[in-house]
Image (spheres, rainbow, N blue to C red):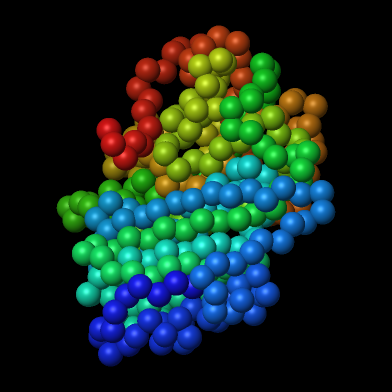
Length: 328
């Protein structure tokens, strides 16, 4: 693990790595115990190595006063979700940290302890990375995973008449963000904590590897349901959706009924980190069985059509969708 930051706050690069980050390599030979400036990857028979990268920045993806557990959760979830959408399981990751003067040893201890918790839960290790100084906190990670060679899921290879499925529930994170930003939203503590937790501590859906051979296409919902579905359609196909089947939590339904949020807003928002995937109708029973075995909620919400666009089940064209764009 490379060292570029200077001594400050009574700790050094060596202390940061030896006391906090060395526990994350699980003594894997690929890491050289962080004594080299590079590492190596192991091939796995009948599998391909899948790579993905995500970066998060202060005041864009999080705020400096956010709990370091939340920041660790987000950078891990973003990447695991991408791997799952391609039908991969995690193997290891590289982590780059640009630290500010505000980051102290205790902050890093909480951050790395939560990384360790997630590594144990999802079975991957820290391969290496880089430490440096910056005027704002920035974190970047590159994840590597394994997918079965013949079952890597493409993002935009949907087929006409495919079923459209979604995992989990949509929209809880959206309301969590609204509650964080708007202090005027009044909720009792139970609901407030529920939605804020969904925003601060998103969880990836790791079903992708287990259903890869049954899928024609998949994507994780990070930039909004409508926007990510549109990417799958790739201007070649359309989608007919059953809006009564869109999965939302009981808590969110109450908030929609109380006019705190509308369904259209939920479906344009991202940060759900669930999967949208398509599959031939003949695989429906197989998919339901696997999801049940893995204890993952799945919902069939529509079907693919040759007619371009996104439609309601009464064939009304939806024109209100958009998606997140860093530069828009």
